[in-house]
Length: 154
Image (cartoon, rainbow, N blue to C red; front, top):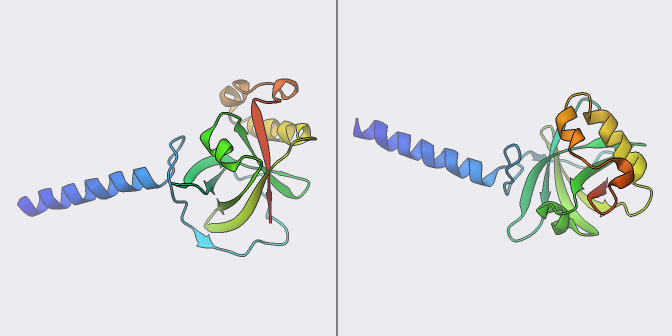
């Protein structure tokens, strides 16, 4: 009986540690896992991919689960300007992205002008499946300063 309790406590601690270290839903973590993979010359079709994991460097690093869009053969992510991970990137920062089981080392760069088509593509992709979340975002014409769009570069 004592062994079962000990095993239960150990498993509970391991589960707690996993929850703290890995991003789960809207709760950020520190690690994203996956297999380090060379960045492909062209990205695979991401139209059916709802979420990726993104790790932003810092002390400690921040890992989040976010949405991704493919726009003109490049990948983009969108976040609220006040989000911690957005502020950790700033104008540009090295990041790691987990897509499926592969983890890629990339650079996230803030798109300062001409970001509206990417934001529209983001809304068009996610609105059918997540209308409540998209409804909570500012309209594309009103998103300046409230939303940050980042290009994920090779």
